Length: 605
Image (cartoon, rainbow, N blue to C red; front, side):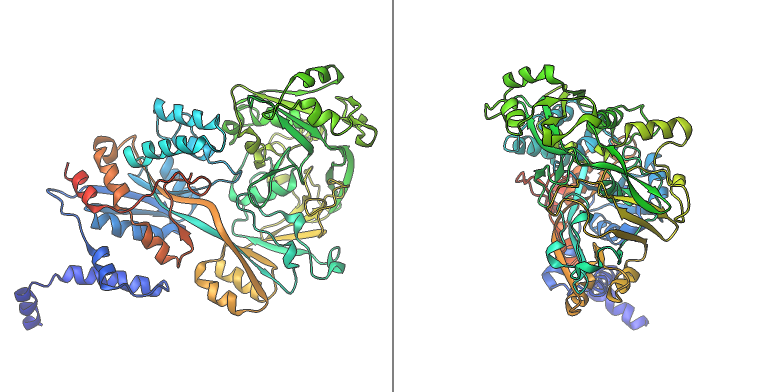
């Protein structure tokens, strides 16, 4: 051993460097990736020369992101930093640490679910953003400008925002965008009924069996990782565990289709129109959607039509920060200035109001649908006889993307009558999990305007049943649910969930780990749909305290230290490059890439 040590010393071999390279190679092999070439190893192992003491940064994240954190740690240490890891076991403990500011950098993600990235960037970087540490008037102005622009003009503004918050100031360091997938049992489900939306949650009413005779007898079995359902009030939680449920339990004025295009299909509107300055939005309501309730474990049509009064009630509470103790989405609807139910007295004004094509709102809605009368009474509506309701929403500024916000789960329509009664009688409020029984004979406190309603829930699963009064006359795939009953299992073990799918215990599984793709492709009973998703993963830097407040030059060192190609390789191509959470929806032309020369310049400044 002594002779080996003398030899190493003589030829100048860096033992620590050899061990470091070996560990990286082993990690890539175990992840299913090929062994890097010499040039790749050289790139991985190239280091920044630091003049003086290496800066130390504290890195916060969840256990679910441990692989990503290890990759980031290696990249930052090669870039001249010391990195101290703080890996929390779950989201709750991670959030506590984040709120206390116990980090210099933290790994986070954002899923944009309504086809427009402005809300994500506002939440992360505006002075009033729910996740923001930043107070920058210029950034606020850019974000507000973007919210008023159309799809063409907004690209340049989003590029400016990225330039400011990522490439100039280094408030964020992008890591990757996630692709999404859905694996399903092709022996059970009709492939033509299985869709994977870009942004929104799965559309439950579209799914159908190969054997249509099973629709009313066999439950469709799905799964999700988190079984904690704190509330089913759509404005009190947007947690992943309830988002998909609320999207399918409550109708909205508009929806996104699978390709992020706005549509009235499956919504409460027959049609809609927007005035020329994008400040007034008109929605012509359908008359064939009724609230469902649960009696003895079975969904029942209440006979209560989903009306304009319910729309006004629901959106008024959505835009009011104080309407409920935890209104998590009021910022999304804060630009709504007024919600009005139109009457016959308003019809003449509609002749004067023009859309962007200089066509009157009257021609678009009243004339086109042979509307004879407008009523404020939902029980008097009869579209066949020409009696309709129109809801007018006005905003405090030009808001061409307001229609996108109305597709979000927080814009779900509740029953004014029922929710008011429940909130008066029950201190915890409508939707609280304690109002959902574990058995079919328990009292159920839900009212649903959407395609399905939750009938019961326990620790292991939730049961849903088709709303018998949902959009009764709509015939396409956005109409009433094809399958009567749905079971949503709670399974926090992704590997076990895949085994259940292969054993035909569940019918579909979303976001399967890419390491299983070869196995899935080898199973003739399984089919997979894949596409680029809307989820971004990134580092947020603490600019309120710590090293990045006192040494802002180091932020740029972090941004330029990141090599997104390593994430793409590690995940076998199941990720893609991003410049910010804007990228999955709008290509600004910006590209982040590793530049160790810039890192060295910044870190030695």
